[in-house]
Image (tube, rainbow, N blue to C red; front, side, top):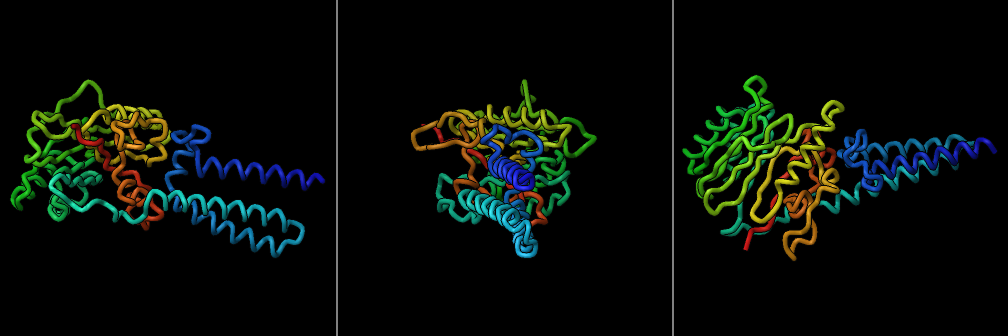
Amino acid sequence: MIRRALAAVVVLAVSGTLLALVWPQVFGLERTSPLAQAVSLRGAAALVAVVAAVLGTLLALLVRSGRRFFAVLSALLLAFAGVQVAVLAGRGLAGSSFETPSAATLTVLSWNTLGDAPGAERIAQLVIEAQAEVVALPETTRATAEDVAARARAAGLPLVAYTVAYDEVSKARSTSLLISSALGSYVVGAGASNTSVLPSIVAVPTGGGPLIISAHAVAPTPSNAADWRSDLAWLAAQCQGPDVVMAGDFNATVDHFTGLEGPAPDAAATRTDLGQCRDAGRLGSGGAVGTWPTWLPPFLGTPIDHVLATPPGG
């Protein structure tokens, strides 16, 4: 009798834990460690759960006295994995549903270069291949950004480089942004506020172009968790009104954006993701494609790099 009671308690505890891991939003814990980190890796969590379910099934077959217990745990783990896969499938794993390019299309590229690691030539090669008009480059220094812009201009892309750096000691504390001169001229200032540990750039148009933001929120490590939450709130506050384009390394998935959505900016926007911005990856059926770490298959990585935008103004 005692063993059955203990088994029931364990099953309930596992059920609650799996619910918190698959949807921490139920408890308002999507930006609280360790659930914030765990929910970032839905694909990896599903894989681990399937492996654990297989092991549980083997134990159910081999251990007569605990057969029902291990069978129930295996069923819970399989259900957990199924929900994770369903969430990922709903957000999109293909990234092939973007609209056919038109005269109104704006091509945006985002790449955290980890302190200029790929080098200006490789970055410029990707920019030119993509024919990007806006390029967000977290952890990219002024010298590299200007070199990339010069290479792009030589290839026929009229890009202008902007950089904000908190210091010149760590390359990670620089963020750069390339904008096509075809979009008009821009002014970048220090601003009254910014993301806390790593800089973001707010480029304000002096003509008719969109407001463009190169974003870099700090990673949610234990020592930076509070700064990470404030960074996301600050970025949400910038994503307001029409004609806003925000791209970069958010160190956050759309799960972490929960509660930071704003009112839909128009009748066509049935939902928003961060502030009044909508996630281009989700809209293009690629919102679940992992962007970090790059050595993992996209299904197992975490989609923490985003391109967000609000609808154009009337």
